[in-house]
Image (cartoon, rainbow, N blue to C red; front, side, top):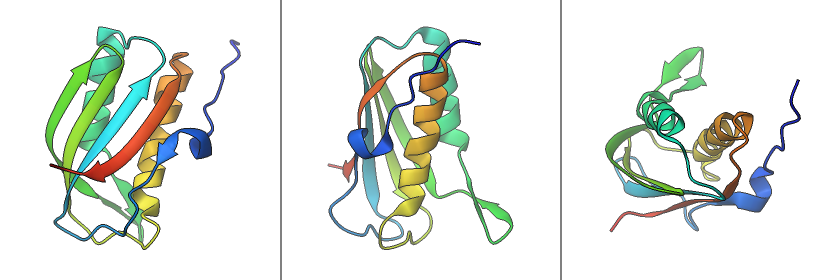
Length: 119
């Protein structure tokens, strides 16, 4: 079995500096240390569009994806929150962790994962 270098979420995740509200538009930005190949890019895009969180024994879509833009080492997603997230926005942190795991299992390192207000 190949050794996987797992990114530490504390080192790459930059959360929003406020508690986002239901309906708010946000931008997720994922930057990798190397180019993401076409297969992994489509996998990540599909994952972003379909990701849900188990809350109270139900899978809940936390956000609606409005747009995904990609570049060689970059994926940006404009999202609209469908639920009121916790004060620490733990839901977005869990999403970040899941993305890290997918990319890391294919030996793609994430250098930054940020959440910001959408412009």
